[in-house]
Image 1 (cartoon, rainbow, N blue to C red):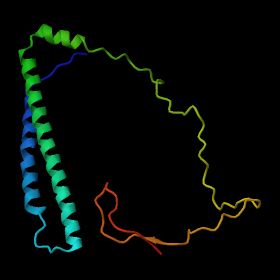
Image 2: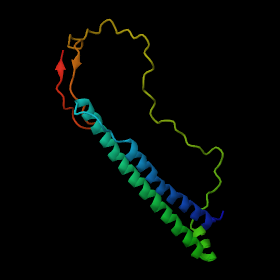
Image 3: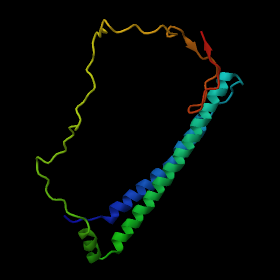
Image 4: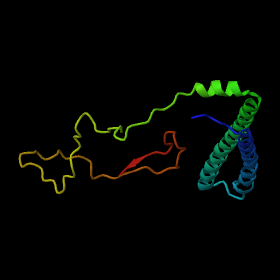
Length: 167
């Protein structure tokens, strides 16, 4: 098996990646045009929605920026690889090809056995479980009470800011 790279195909892929990097500007324009919340009041619900929207816009800015950078840098690297192939002589290509180990034919019965060494101890569906007659009753508790926690919603990942009420 001989590795043969077509530098023209690498350059075409480079151009495609760099065009995709340029297309992130379209997504950025869409974000600027349609992800702004205007005309709201200062109510608690509007402030919460506005905060969430700002967080989403900021994260989208980060993603678009990183995506543009990765696509652009990948295109630059593909261009460099194409240039390397153009500049390399036949013997250098052959030496590079010889560094790649050949894969021997894999026998048909050489598969991966995913059988666990320890038997599975997860019980099957108990169906209509009936506890043993000698099992004591659970102690009385406050399982029947309802806990309510009114208050403004918090930011994901931060502790709640509201106060809880136990009914």
